[in-house]
Image 1 (cartoon, rainbow, N blue to C red):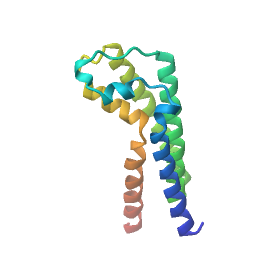
Image 2: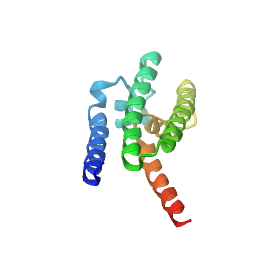
Image 3: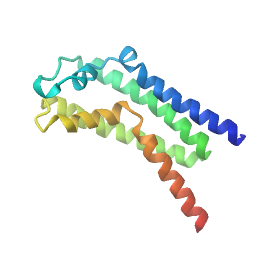
Length: 145
C-alpha cells in the first residue's frame, strides 16, 4: 500500500474515532456523561440501568477497539502486533469493567476521580495513543539491533 494512501487511511480512521466521541451521547446509553459534566461532587450518582450501561460500554469499547486495531494494522502491517493488541484490549476491558462495576456498587466511596478515569479508559480510545508509540519505539529498537 502506498505511503500516502496509508496516511490518509490513518487520518480517516482517527476522524472515525472523533465521530464516535462526537455522537456518543446520541448513540450510547450513559447517564454518567451528564453526571461528570455537571457538578458531580455535590450530587449523588445517577440512577442507571446496569445491563444497558454495561452493554453500551461494551459496544463503545468494541467500536473504538476495532477502529484502533485497524489503525495499528495500517501503520505497522504486523499480525503479531494485532494479536498482542487484541489480547491486550480484551484483558484491559475485563479488568476495567470489573473495577468500574465495583466502584459503582460501592457508590464511589473511594472518590469520584478514580471512577471518572476508569470510565474514560472504557469509553475513549486511549490505548491506541499508548500502543502506537510503544510499537514504533519497539520497531526502532529492533532496527538498531
